[in-house]
Amino acid sequence: MTKTICLLAQKGGTGKTTLCLHLAVLASELGRKVTVIDIDPQASASAWKRRRQRDTPEVLRREVGDLAGVLADSGREGKDLVLLDTAPHSSHEAATAAELANLVLIISRPAILDLEAIGESVKIVKKQGSQGAVVLNACPPPHHSGETAIVREAREALGVYGLPVSPVSVSQRAAFSHAFIDGRAVTEFDATGKAANEIRSLFEWIETRW
Image 1: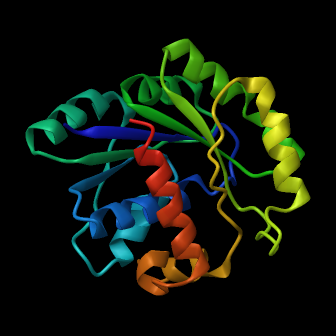
Image 2: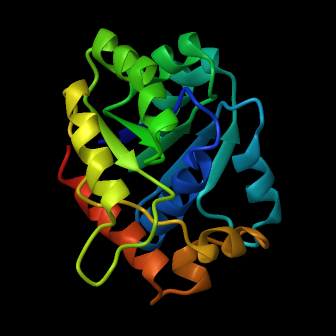
């Protein structure tokens, strides 16, 4: 059965598309049949795909009105995973994508302005009755003793929204950007690096949410 993940952020600059593509590549490496549906007008995922030298994962540029049909096609084609890369600042499109997804990941940086901005995304998830969770992205890398204070405090602040918060936070690391230059992902750029390991850990946690 095809599983669908909607990546959602009503505030720009959270790294939503970046996270979407790194997860998609990892899932492909694990043998999943993966499609990314790019409904963000910025079309960053589609631009990345044009730089990429490999066929997988599939990236389709579509409008939000096409989603139901594309997801139906994905099911008939035996796709294992579909990731929806949504547009920021578009509640209508976000609501449609959230309604069609098995899991909605709300992506946020740990800074206070970002944490305050996810309220609209949480409202969308709850109104649609979707299963949702928050992922902290672009965080300061952890210390030897664990997560930094700003990440711990962000987790505490997110408690008011009543949604699960991924125990895996994704750090701000140069490898995430460097990999994209020629259309790769971190698991291809530096397979044993810290960035790649964070993506693997996040994907393992996501798979427990089905």
